[in-house]
Length: 282
Image 1 (cartoon, rainbow, N blue to C red):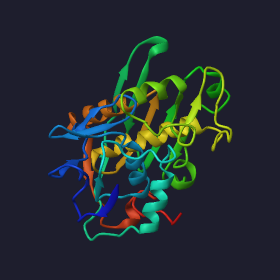
Image 2: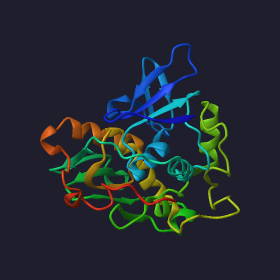
Image 3: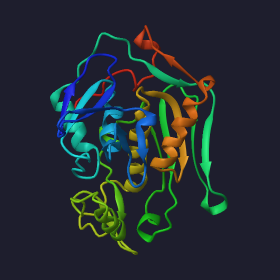
Image 4: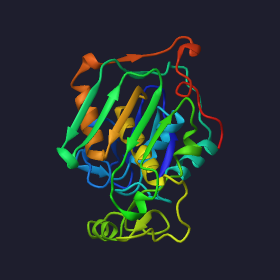
């Protein structure tokens, strides 16, 4: 996979360069065609799986325009987090462009939900002068129950690279086996995921954060939401949400143009802190 600069207003575009004729897949909410275990985008029958960790890094770094040349159907899992993407992008350098940065500002609440009672899950976007994410999980597993299951991350007061980027994906041994049977996560294992059996975490080095499970859900959500193509000015809150519900939330938002507006800031001082400026180096 090779990441290349793109002109202003290009957006983020994946290019399958392993094909006889390279196929471009522009990232947007309706390009997401599969949300089982990961977020998959497609165009002209060509797919790229597991884009959410790389998209999360782009969101955390404020990257708007990028070509991503890839020679396979799945983005490399690396260590199961977005930390390597953040490190490599910051080392390559991030350029400021002359076109004003455009944001999607939420003006009215938008919410989607599934299930009832103890099966309910939901995700919501509310008006907020900045970008804040609140997430709560409820896995009812001994290893998860012993950690924090709710976290709030605000781009104004937090640092994505420090607070979120290192949180790894997680799953059960049976999930890894199932994904491998479908051709996904072929390199998946203890080196790039938190793996649990029915009782405990199997990784000998333990967790990177005390609340790494829910922090990874924040990481995923940032990637899922960034397929909008522009950074959000919003408070995202969710309970037991995942890739499918996050994408449903975006589609609901786009179907209600009265709930958002596209904005720029002529004076950077008027923009919310933490979303208008590039973050410091790693």
